[in-house]
Image 1: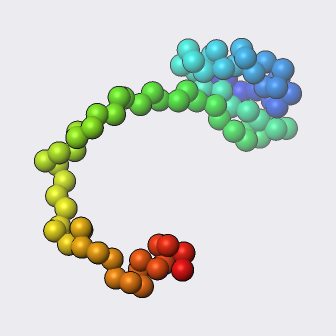
Image 2: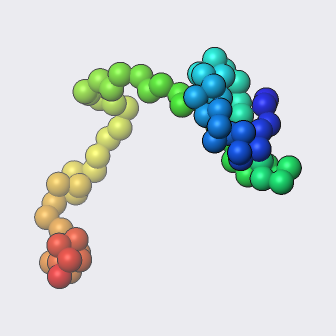
Length: 77
């Protein structure tokens, strides 16, 4: 883990991001006190339509119309 102060982070942001992409974590400190941490973003897998089929079950009432009061609340009335 690398710790840098705010000024150094602003000056070397591109270099720090390259280190994060390589797997390192960077902590940004103000007056020696850690304030923020830069970590790499985990890539999400490809979303596949129907991947939850058979894993969840909806009650038949799920498709019933909403009561008027609740419908009005959803519509902002």
